[in-house]
Length: 252
Image (cartoon, rainbow, N blue to C red):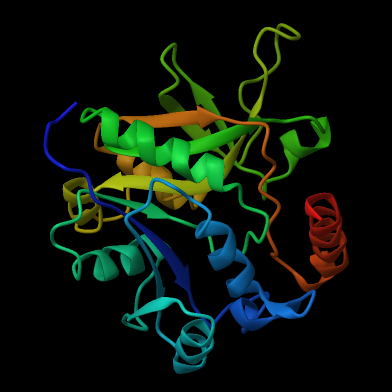
């Protein structure tokens, strides 16, 4: 571990334009915008030096500032959330690492974010860190919207896919894992990553983490039981509100 002080910035990318759910960051769940739920959960983290919202929309900026978030305005032309993170990261040249916190997961676990931040800061050999949880519902194996990941012996990612991996030729030999879209990057790796063109496997699967593997990056995967339920479509609103209300009841 380096003796240099570590500065880890949590970045929540938030954009208005969404094919399936326009304006999603400001959609209200249990009386609060979705983005506010994510921000408040993230403020419970202990290992982040700062938290910023990266957006390209004035409405999102105004809302975020109203509940106390620091906002970085970014271009409207970014093809991915990682590109938005990289532009925001350029405003923090002293930061050593960045955590990409999905803006549509109001139940994200602060302890999981902290674990990623800690492991990333402690091991300079990690280029990128993310998370995965065991698949309990076997129907998810064939769901292309559920990204699967397979690991090596030190929990580094070997491959990510929308297909069912690994193929269960021998039952129960390997527990299938669902990838969770939470990422941490070394600052230098993040800036390199966004200069690389999309890799062939990335284009085939529409998974940008495959670009990192294409270039030989080490992606460490933290295992968790957290399911990381996000708001992808309006049909999920009732489920998330029920889970949020249950959480509020348990904490009171």
